[in-house]
Image (cartoon, rainbow, N blue to C red; front, side, top):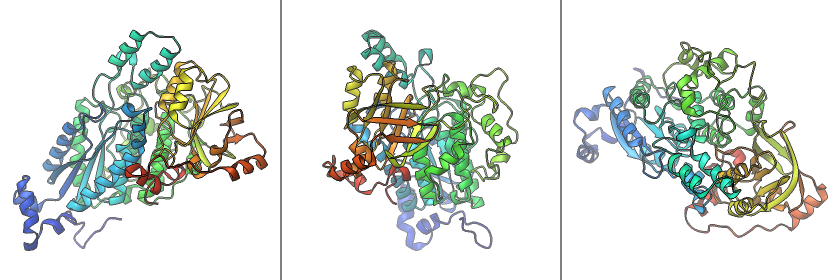
Length: 562
């Protein structure tokens, strides 16, 4: 919890240790070289953690947003100090060995923000993220450090022609393989689908996590629902800089905000929006750093009560930019609050409760078709199904919109890597009735738990979305849809049952009863498990090897400090 003295919170609790007193003259000398004045040493220091890079369109504009946040901080009486952390691009590395570093980068980002903020004695900080893993990485650092802080989302990209986006390109690859489009058609999609800065355009992982972090109370109202290149986003950054100074003065820290009820608000909002399965992995990790007891079963419990209301891609029709034009996520949250599905008394970074933040929010326009009413949902319960069974005794996560059906029984076609599976799909080897099993792609086995957007995009592109199921101990991009089950635990690399599935085995997935089973006698399963031997690690040195040694199960958030 926050620390107060007799006269209220100390706004320079951390920075005074670094810059006050005769003995800290060397520290002040170093800071004068980067622009500090005498007056600046009397102000609370605020780190501005920027994830800017030219690696990806999601983050290519964040340097400009970081400057806006710094100006907001300085105008409110703080002293801003900008610093950077890394990002990697899922969309670029997808389907390649480089994708193994994606989830790993979440830990690197959280660790690096923790290192800089703690080492430099910042009294508070603003984090600005724009791509899938740097957003939860920012939030994990906020929870760990427990200093006044605000998260800012870099904003969504504007769609390409015909509402195209990055997932359009992945699915076009499958359509091209099926002979449905020409080489020139594919090149046209490639050239136009991603027109500029911002995160992927549907309710994929970036927009899902931005919405979840707003519902958690870590960002300002509507921060999740602004385009990357907009005046609203620049204003959001300036207000975040001001807000963190107010939090410092009030002594409000993440531990005051990140309650179990706040995580339940985030889960509820993600479900109502039809968000990504990655939200489960990331919210579990953030809760771990916040020391909040959150489990897979909490997602199942809440999912039984919350409907899917937003008709957003990948399973639905609309883009995030379209949702922004009708009001963003706040009218949806107000609807959920009024129905008793959100905890309105949770504190947020505004210094007010969620209910106070939503008090003046009006409904969506009458003629909008993006978000349905509670009495006319797209799905009566969650699309994020937590499954258990002899194939996933510690749990698995399915993304079942209902459009593909809720039950699938088929014949296993087993692959030991994403690349093997993708080639078989594109070559027409995978056919209707198959259950594609991709294993040794879990947190330890990958290492890094790659996303399977390339195989799922190819399945959709070949017209097999409701005819083929895909199971993996890896995970899925927020852009994946179809009958897909990921996060199967225990993973293959540690001897989970997915390791002993053979071609031709029958598998059943039933989202209604939340079950995933290998249709074999237990005696045969036990025999196979006894004869299983672990494969040689794919990485023996460096970051991936270190990650594989440290990482926990996906069912516990794939954290590295458990």
